Image: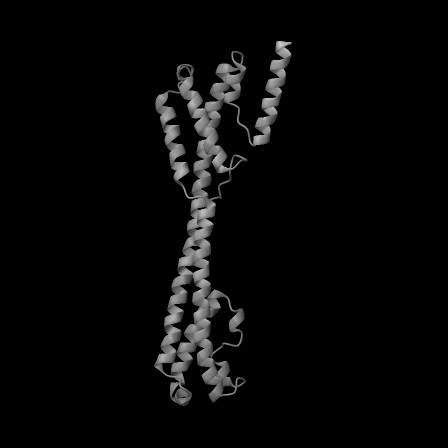
Length: 237
């Protein structure tokens, strides 16, 4: 059975998740005496901290996309070199035969510029095979093993660049999945820690209670801060 794609359980950036986790770990260290009453001890807090360290070490999507773009550019370069080698052959073939002849069409290069990666790779291989079949007839226009080898070498380089690019795409998919899974683990542990923290301070200390409130955006945090200050002003008056 195919594994279902993971979905993020939180609605803020990964960097914010990490910062919120580290902030709450610091508060929990401050309140560790109370946390131990819930069975949440220093060992579990240390494990949470280790999860944060592993999460921070994961490559982010910008890094992965950058790697993918580099390999894609190299694939395009390799493709252009292969097309140039094929066109060089076909210039010679056109000198010998009409570009409307069956012998010319047999190479299958009519739509070279519009081919997909797979089509281009097959075209390169077909050009090599057909050129060797007709090498005796094409020798007078300069078709020889050197011309054919140029196509073979550029086709091999293109195939290698294509495989590397596809590997990078797969690597990104795997890394994104891993980051989502690790992020969800962090978020779930953050929820547990914050629920304990809020329960500890709910009716005892409002500022410490708010230390364990999770905000999905800076705007949420600003609104909460304004409300807290307004409540404090009302209490003073």
